[in-house]
Image (cartoon, rainbow, N blue to C red; front, side):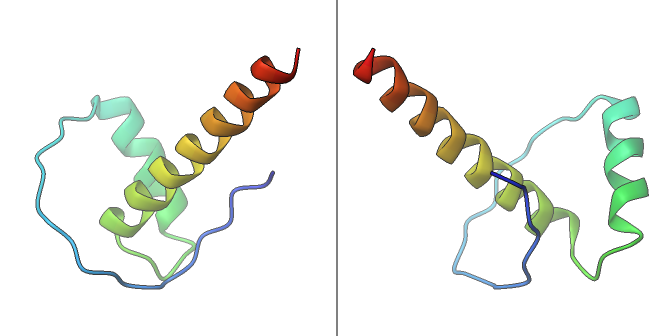
Length: 63
């Protein structure tokens, strides 16, 4: 499944997360090409990771 960015906004809460500087630099470089906030990117990346994890877990159960 490809990772696609969207601009939909949802109700949310604040959380504090620390990022390694090299990772933050890579993310900021990518975000320059999109009209999307850092928070939106992180949310979508987390949702994508969870979907992939669920897919991987369901594959394990089928084997």
